[in-house]
Length: 332
Image (cartoon, rainbow, N blue to C red; front, side, top):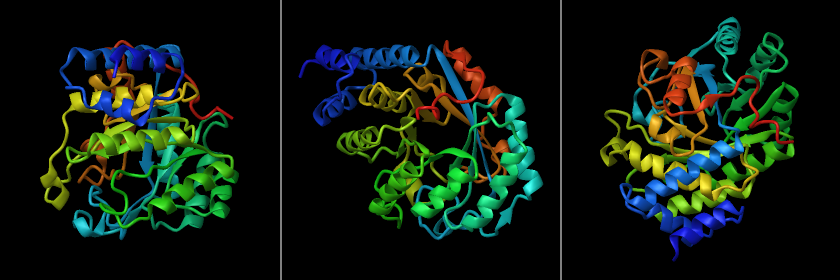
């Protein structure tokens, strides 16, 4: 397999094959070829987004022990990290959204645990929508939904959703792969844009698994794809598997960028890092409140980055920052 031919194929807008993705993912992270993949992804990502990265921001409406048994998630009841439930008031939720607006976030994500009452989420979201700029992109990060609920999200003023089929879904979680995929179809049918990601990547995931997931995320023409490594939750069974380093993460971010169609402008990584940014990531998240990768009730006191710190990481990585509503949710 010719390395330069693969890069040329991606440059020309042709979709890379499964074998080509596996080949790129199999390159030693410190090899000349992988550095060239990272450089190629960086330059192409900058070309698509005019050299301007985006910072989106997320807060959680609630924190509660969740029955979904996602082994990588601090919310999972099975992990025993959080045993009590709490919820923001509507006023607190509005204040978080307004603060993100003031800080210059390009989109505001509103998250709940998977079993949070959906109609209550819609009620709160409508109040948030009334109290932020009409230009602000609101994005929902919620559990699987039927079409009727997807339409309610659209009607409540959401521009899109974040939804992913996680690596080893149904094995490391008790959720159905088919139900996750059906939810994505429902969101799209309702007129919502979909952001997604290859996540949460651990050292046990094979290049074949990663390539298959890159292909899946490309298949529905998302607003953005990308890749995120798993953050081990101390004391959990999955933490014994360890975690990949940022260099390996940067490689996967770069290959994901090259594996996407040119219509996909965004390429994310989480958590924010310079290596991700120089490998083609043009989207980071700031976070406050509950965070499924953190053991703090308020991630701003733990792992969470602020809008300004995310901007600083991009600037250190030679990116400019987009000012205004996110371009990634304006495809339709």
